[in-house]
Image 1 (tube, rainbow, N blue to C red):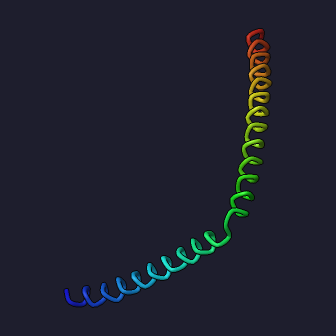
Image 2 (cartoon, rainbow, N blue to C red):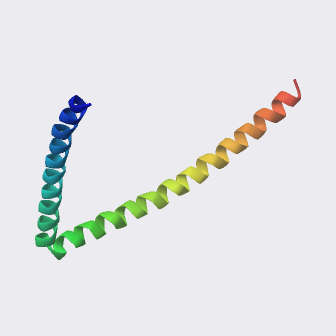
Length: 83
């Protein structure tokens, strides 16, 4: 039983150290983002707008393709009924 405790403690210490390092990296990123200020927000807004427009185009294309597929399936079904 003591062997298990001995092995667990170093693992928990290692995990805590990794967690501390990860938190430090996250804090560093947050500081960097905070310092970059509004110009970063403008770039993000432009990227978001571009992605929204692309999403709209893809939805329209998807609807068009779906309609064409439905039509083709209907024609195939009618053709198979006659066989």
